[in-house]
Image 1 (spheres, rainbow, N blue to C red):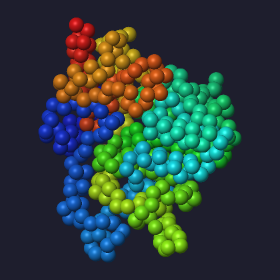
Image 2: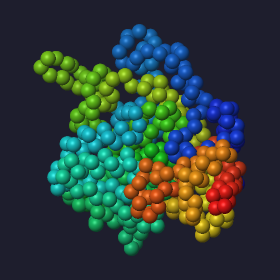
Image 3: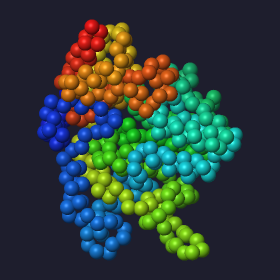
Image 4: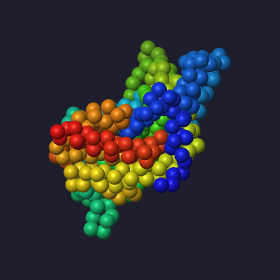
Amino acid sequence: MLFMFDPKKIKKDFPIYNQHPNLVYLDSGATSLKPRVVVEKITEYYNQYSANIHRGIYQISELASLEYEETRSVVATFIGADSPSEIVFTRNSTESINLIASTVGQDIIESGDEIVTSIMEHHSNFVPWQQLAFSKGADFKVINIENYELRIMDDKSKVDLSDIVTKKTKILALTLVSNVLGTINPIKEISQAARKMNPNIIIVVDAAQAVPHMLVDVKNLGCDFLVFSSHKMFGPTGVGVLWGKANLLKKMDPYQYGGDMIDIVSLEKTTFAEPPHRFEAGTPNIAGVIGLKAAIRYIKNIGIENIKIHENKLANLAIAKLDKAFGEKIRILGPKADLNRSGIISFTINGVHPHDIAQICDEEQLAVRAGHHCAMPLHTCLNIPASTRASFYIYNTPTDVDKLAISLQRAVKILKK
């Protein structure tokens, strides 16, 4: 199996393997491991210019501000945004979506309107829209799945939203990659079809499982907003990204009030800063944002396309080995075609609970996720209470896949005694 890079050498970039040399980490869908360059960049901030940003006119404050704002430019380039001013820093993807729901959503949704999402969404891209619809008396519509893909295709295999999106549909919120199924949704085609039904629709894309693993260009997708998280792409926790079209961001009211998001404050009124600073009240996670810049540069050095190819090969290998090891006893969730899926593999094994599997795997220092993965509606739809999930990244190897298969066989043997 030929890879574009050597994952064994890649592992040397991640300090955690020094402490846990036998660790097989297969939970990057929850959070990725952190490379040394990111850890060092965070330490650099605290050791060399640990000052607040946008406030001081002294040297280290100006340096911190420069590093922070440079990250905005790096992020914008990475996702194909027109301008750094379209990049808003939040705590995570969840806050980014809540920001949109609490501003644009509150402004445009009225009784009788429609909000559309899908059954495969993470709770972060489901519950905020559900609650907004309930509070406004709007209709909350959910796209179902068929063969682990969105049920949106017509007889000619083209996206057809005529039964889903109407003139009343104000918001369409979908994931680019499912965090359970690994399904890659055709967001570009969906956006085009949705705008034919309603040119004024607001399209929100959850790209938390996409941006770390595949090329994402916001203009190519045709969406209005896109969100993702630093911690899933080698960056620090506590940093999220919200990209929005400039004309929409300028119309949006602040999400929170406080320092650094104001223009002028007087007893009579307050005016607010231009985007993106309008949405970044208070002191942000400065070190985290600066660390994200190092993470993106690390990804670019390896090559995002190389990462996707690597993960696809591992996922295909894992599916083949698990099918061979368990046959009809295993149910692999998600499309089998590698072009339609990411490096996420969720599964169930007959007669064995996912939590028990995860616990036994942990005895061999193999980390997999077990549960509903913040996607309870999807698991209910699939008629299962939980699943086991293995999610691959650049530090995983074919040997890790072999260990997964062996550990699962051991777990089944123990649990069925």
